[in-house]
Image (cartoon, rainbow, N blue to C red; front, side):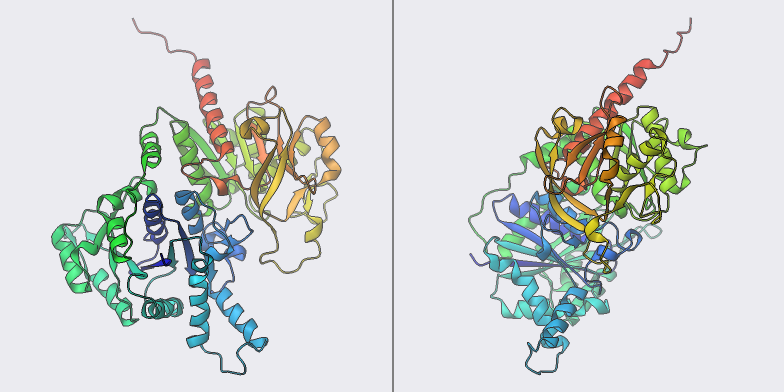
Length: 550
């Protein structure tokens, strides 16, 4: 079978959920035994999102091979349980950089370099690159932005050309659009969808399938109207109604027959029925929790939910495993002071101190860590969160009052956290951090070893600063265990307190949230939620019972 291509475009508004729709369709096709992957083409001129502030574009997702990518790749991995790579995310910046580098190298033999054919040829090359590997039956390509954006035009032109070049049945276009419901008029409005499709048609592309994002169900009459005005068959119009969880979307689309229509249009026959038993079992546990817990997420970018997307989704996965509803309370570290830290954290069953960059909000993170360490509330620190845990311990237990990180104070005389040696000569910021999956050897008998049940693990990284080895003996002599190290460099990857001292206190330099999926929840998150449930139960037992009234 030739590799088949599905292009997912969007119109009317951004953030309609193209990534969730693409991942959901991929899950349905994968469940039928097909080999599927998804890629994202982003229209911004940054070479990658690695230098973008989280407020700009949400979290930067990191792949095993060290690519800094769009957060939608996290959705792809969480749904498919298959790693993505450098090839799964391409930006306009990367396309233009390649073409300009080729021009400087004389690749075009003196020709005038133009958007058509040079830019579009490079886009098409990237769009079909994964398909040429022979590893996939279907490639789903999400086109970032919305139809009508100036930045998206070269990508849409490339899709038009591929539609023309490929054989019938090898390429289809799925268009996601908005059908708003006007509550004052009690009416669904199809005009935005009609105009969106018309703009797509002006680019030379007629969608094969239309998926309508809506907050209420679409009557058949509305679907028929959209089909008539947008030149598609009525059975090719689907609704994507707001769901209680993004993980419901595959089942909702399957109930409407989306995967059947896609297979029909791609001329794929003799595939198995979808196997979604494990997926349904996950949803059953997710929607029927036996208990609940409250987790504080202490971070610097809490105003934008997408800034900590993978962490939030990891809590969903870990909560389902533990049959627990995880209530995440986002707390801005800048708003934590010595006078209010108890009020903010005393009712929490666990506290996660999130990753980040720079000195803003650092004192609040340190105060939060000190509070949970002294009050034996389960603690989990990630990247900067781990570094702050070490600094807090050095300040309070080792009495090194000026302990800090050179990220915060480059002239520090007590740099507990320091810039990695190989980073000190670098001046270029983009793509130069310690990125991707690295091994970590765990110390037997420690909590982290119990959690993984293995001596050697591999997790993804994204950092420039590390624990300063000069302080390792001093720190360990005072009780903080350095329980995980990189086997090649000795870099400290995990710190923890013994369980006889604290029930659950772990900081990790890596980003475990990036490896959590629906069907394979991340072990530390699972253990953290389990510890939070236990902490809650112990607190309930210790509270005095109310006196009975006569």
